[in-house]
Image (cartoon, rainbow, N blue to C red; front, side):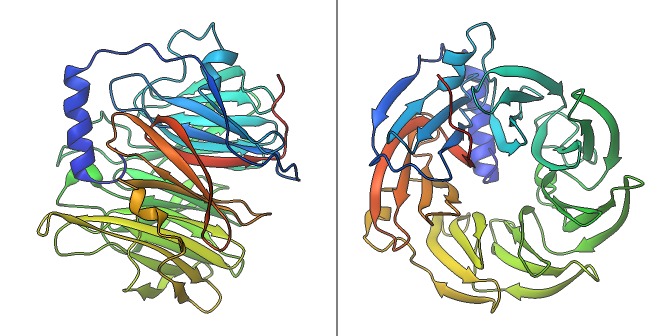
Length: 380
């Protein structure tokens, strides 16, 4: 749902004709070599196709090399609807794991050491989450899940992590997506995805003390991802309009809040930062050509040069149907790419060495998306 208008339309159709399905119990697969380190494992959130209530949570254990599917259902048999409908974001903050479940209108809060339910926060059409001090900030589309040229502006909810209560909100642009905190400013990428073809072009800037929008930065249509580098520059991805305007990446100076550079030759569907390397993959659909332009690039954020457009070097990317998520282990520099395949059946996660050679792969739930690494071993 979060990639293109085509996917959103397809999933809305599925929601109208599919009944909720029972989620399968957890399954375990030995895939890795069992290398324990400072990072003990990772969680992977599977979105699940819209309307099927099939958002699931997987876990990979570095110490044993075992990949476990659907651990949330196993650890939380008393939660009737399990994780819910369409998982959109996953983050760890302190001793808790937070899953943003879009169409179920909630943020699920778990113990990071057990994956057991602690509580939840009700936020309509919630999208992404970030944190500072005792507060979580959650972007919300505010209105229903539907394409509507008259859709309302979105907002960011301020959540007290000690009480799991929404304590404030700030109106931003249309259909807000990812957020990044720089000092005392919260940056929000506004997409306007429901208002096609009249996309939003702006990044909202919120002062965290007053919790008010203090300015907007005009960037490009249909903004999505944000990454902050070590030099104080904010990398912003635009998905374009799927016709004439191509997806690309922009760089914002966060001291003066202006767009200082545009990388015309770098399309972006998803990106993640590790050190000075920005890992980017593109699966950019174009309605004119009815094709997707797929590439896997690394950018040096210090020099702003594209180092390679082929970080997968062994040709195994030819197996992918629809690359959907990306993550990099900050210690080992292993690269993880997920494949949503046909969006309605189980996907896959692929683990690559820093040199871009396949180490292992595993079957996942439906539409594998967000990966977060943990330093806390998962208890039995």
